[in-house]
Image (cartoon, rainbow over all chains, first blue to last red; front, side, top):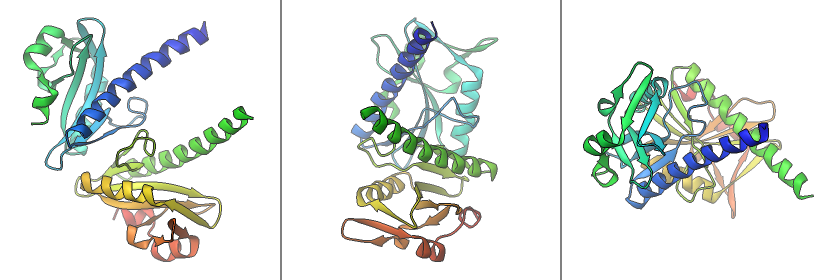
Length: 137
Length: 137
């Protein structure tokens, strides 16, 4: 039982990491530099998943993948992203990838706050979010 | 045999990661922000182990621990550090921790180039290197 649970966790974690890596490659492929932050979410310090720069701009990105047409993001995640972005003088973004869709990038203002979390639904993300090509323009 | 080897690798790797984490905590404890770069050394892109900032300055740091009173650092590691620092507009440093010594921070000019690698010996490191408190001053 424990083994099964831990395998599930592993697979969810590696799926997330693969998605982040995909984004890292996109940045480098477009002449941006990008890094994945180690232990993001597990350390007690402000954090993001990715930090990217083209020397003029810096982006701090929290990555989320979603199987459902909506995604809840914990308030603590958003607070950490905001603090991290401020410290590293970067623009904070939430990158969300719904099933069979491209990455969409949302500013913190684009997120809908509920009682317990921030919510992103696919319609709003498509309306308000920008694509990678627009993000790095 | 393979298992044994892989355990050794694991332990060397986790020792390195623990040393990096120790440094991360020192930065946060001194009102700097710091992150560990994931997959540093395993990705094909310019990289460092740590990126730290106090908003005014940014430091890109490659961490090395040494059991012997000397340490060889691959030229490729230094090239990656240099490129990474340039991209992220950071000052490149090699942090080295010899057995029972504190972290010492060396600029790239402090490293001694040999045919195949850069070499740091403990005497030179103590002469030329600076301590953490001086680094963040």
